[in-house]
Image 1: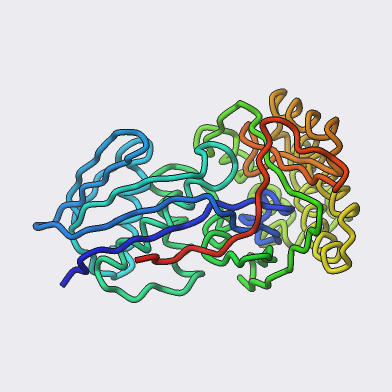
Image 2: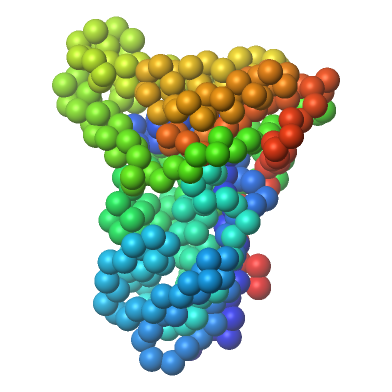
Length: 344
């Protein structure tokens, strides 16, 4: 029997450091934010799902037992339902009302928030026990990979599921160990600023970057770039050498950021944000003129460090503002919040 109602909320995320490392089995340091996606699920007869994207004023319907590919936001709804079914979970027909407060295409993991909220709502409606965080993240990632065409890793889903108030989480994507790291900012503030350029992982160079990393690993004879060292990089042709150099240095920056937070050295954290952005711009080639202008705007406003967020190619940028700096017009303060959950 289906539940009378299931309401799920999944947050977006901000990644302090550790970009494009998840699919290379590396390290990242994200935190869940308070903005996210809410899905209200109510039962329906038959075997159909009716999904309503309230913010867009759009609707989708499909057979729960035979979902077919569809574009846009519909791909995520159908993909989540299909991948949950493939994992052996018996779902119930229902109506899904979707609303969101996290901006789309901003590098704040709106897609993952949608996937996770959909999963929890469908599981709640079916009165099914949710899988563990790692398995549920894999299910959501498969929905994004197979149905939306973006070959993302597990960063966004795990960050949404594992968020904790007042903390970032250090994720090791080889072992899937997740450790909270207190985010004690005092009078410092983390802010995001929209570059004005929307990005979409499937349509950007994201998939190409992942393929380049896989080719670099093949040439080096290693499982993933997590195993690469600086001494190996000269064996790679350009641009594979630059891609690998970013991954190696970004993993090191994650550990350095953890130490900076433990030591309350926020100025050092700011420098790491700057270094991460330079690496993403110069080695990974995911910045754009609009992103560079947004980063420069934050730095001119007094940010101790700033960098592009998410997969790059547009979206928001992150800045760390010291106590004496004013938050510039258009920037929004972000704070760590709890992870995804059923709220009703």
